[in-house]
Amino acid sequence: MVALTVLAAAVAFAVLAAPASAQKTFTTCMQSGCHAQSSGDDFHNKDAHKGAGCTTCHTGGFSPGGVTPASCVSCHGGTASILTANSTHTDPPQSCATTPGCHGVPPAAVTTTMTLKVAPASVAVNKPVKISGTAGPLPALAGAKVAVKIERKAGKKWVKAKAATAKVGAKGAFTLTYKPAKKGSYQVTASIAKTSSFTAKTLKKAFKAKQ
Image (tube, one colour):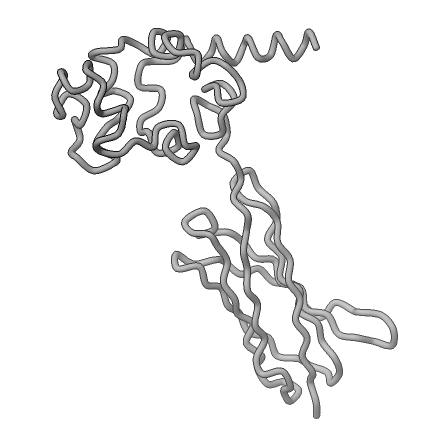
């Protein structure tokens, strides 16, 4: 318990000691539901905000991304002043030192989705089989590696025929081809390993090779 308290205090101190623009945008803050304001709501109708004028806050334009943490500094002071002025910034569970995506706290990993297709389902020996699929959500999964393992059934066991790696493209697709050298039943396993950005996912498909 003491160790956890010390760790929490250290994280909080690091946040308070960070520069005023420690968060370059409010994107992660909006995703967490803390700063998802819209025109005409209570936030915009505060006397202080109405009196400041729209361009004081919307330094980057009037789109949701037009307001940045740096825009708030002129009125609210630096990071330490902003965080300590409102308990919602420092009290758990939504504090800036613990909320995913805030001030050095890793963003929450997205749940990986994946599809897998093997065609044709029956192919002649030494003829190509196309292994394809999609992975998402994007852009988190763009560039992710898909480990593809191809096995052939030998009696009651599955024997490795080939191992390869495919890369998820910018539009979420991946593909590779394989030519079975022997007849029999085959199994394709496509796997995406867990990272700090997304969860793991594994799918399997079967096909047959004939003479």
